[in-house]
Amino acid sequence: SSLEGKLSSSSGERKAIQAAVESYYALPGVPDEECESVDLHDFFNKNGVMIPDSPRNWVLQASLRKPLSRSKPSTEKHGSLSTRQQLLNSQNSLENARKRAQFQRKATSQFQGKANACAVDIQRLRHLHLIFQPLEYVPSGPIFKKHIAQVYMEDTALNPEEEDPEEQTLMNKGTGSAMTNEQRALLHLIFRKSIMKVTAKGGRATLMYRWTWFRFLIHCQLIGTDDSWDMKTPSETKVPWSLAVKIFKLFQEPNSQPPALSFSGWANALQAAIRAKGLYTTAPEVIEAVFSTFIPRAQMQMGITDQEASKEGDRSHSISSRQNSRTSSRAMSRSFSRGQSRSMSRSLSRSQSRGMSRSMSRSMSKVGRSSSRALSVFSTGGSTCGEDSDDETMTDDGKLPLVWQLNLAEQQICEPECLQLLHEYSKLLEILFHHYADEDKMSQDMFTALLKELRFFPDFCQRYSLKKHLNATEARYGEAELGFAPFVETLCRICFCFLNIYGNTSQQLAASKYKMLWVLALLEARLPRKFRVNASDHGDESEPLDRVQPQGADSLWHQRDADFDISVCDNKDIILCQTMEKVANALPIVQAQGGGASTLENEIDKALSMLRR
Image 1 (cartoon, one colour):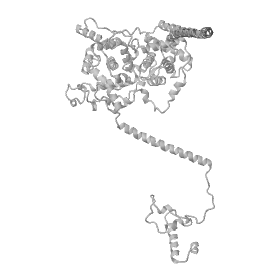
Image 2 (spheres, rainbow, N blue to C red; image 1 turned 30 degrees about the vertical axis):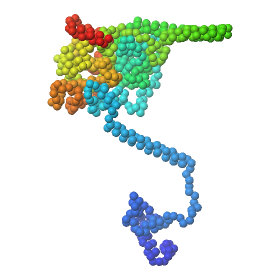
Image 3 (tube, helix red, strand yellow; image 1 turned 60 degrees about the horizontal axis):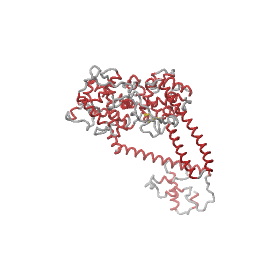
Image 4 (cartoon, rainbow, N blue to C red; image 1 turned 90 degrees about the vertical axis):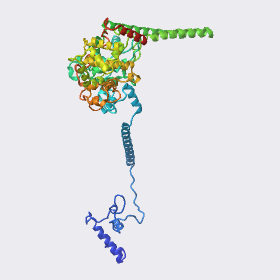
């Protein structure tokens, strides 16, 4: 009615207005009492295109009682935002932009990771081909790729970006209280003896590698599962393999390949292993436990007598006293020479003072060189500088493999990753052993026949080196025939010695797990056809199998015991239990009896020895 009065009285306009009002009330979903306005977006679809059923007077309907524009300028002031709200809006905008960028980077990295997984890393593939020679292929199964990606046990523990609270606890416990000179000398003697077991005669060693660290913990009887000892008796403290691996990683030298410990890092790691279970809380308790309980166990296993330990303490004490006396004498000589040179330079000519200064500098340089040779082994943290004495137990005949090479191979075999692989794929080894054994015992002749059938003999070991491996195993186990554990030990030691001595650079520098994978892959490839399920699919009997990867039921990687965990396995149940507990270089190398070898064999051995020299 108000519109009718303002507009003209023409019937056309009046009818249009009346039609607009009627169409407004006829819109669906709008109550009759709410007749203020019609939303403009009701006449358009999601793409901004007008709906075909929209009326011709949609503008009037949308602007009814709510003009779309003003005919006069507005006098109302627009309310501005506060400074705080503007700051919050800018911060929110930056945060949203950062989240969008982070999301885009994450999506890009995921896409790149998928693309890289599908692509082939030529350089890494070439490196793997060098490691797995003489195989002409690299195993490509998904389980094998997982073994290759996870070299060490700590690689599977946690996400690298996440913090491990247990590591922080071990690091926060400190390095223990101060030791006496005799205690430090004893620690240094054990450290030096341990690393000299796997070092060439006359070599200089300053770091303890990962495999020697585990052998030392076994000598201290510190390796074991949580249910294998009385949790209330501190002297029976044991740590599982997983925790020993973690402790080594915390104290290892940065960027060391292979991973290794310095002397100070080794001492701190030993104290951390003793403190790990919380039975030793204070620093004096830890030091007392180290030298009263655990170090004597290692000392007994390594054959270090008390006289030798006291001799080492006297030696270190004399070196430190000589160093202190020479340092003080050098300081006195410096002060005296300065005063004398000042007084004499005033009275003497320039030529005489120059000649005296030259002679004095020469004498001082001699003193400095002599004092530098007498530096204490504890003068620099983390080093064991000094002359290495030859180990009396490392007597050898000069023919390969040497005693220290046998020790190195055995310590690498006893790393937790290698023990894990041996138990996961023990079925293959059991098949080979029981086929050639008679009532769970394998003779040395049958073992030689097995090596010939696998072409390990004479490819990886010859007559004399095989005899040396068998004699070492016989000395450890006390019998000539091989049980399952001696069989596995001898087979793995032959392969590891071959890789360490005659392998290429990639094989020699490879991790112990890679070497064990090499052994298993070669056994899989050279498994005799009579053990294969699909023997008829592999061609002629004389054809070598190093070129074709076994598939299906013949694949070793499908016969895995995935439930085995070395960290929860008792030491007595480990296949190489005696290999871990007994020292190899303390065992006599039994020589062949007279008449055991022909004259031709002796001449061949002499010729090979001359060629090596």
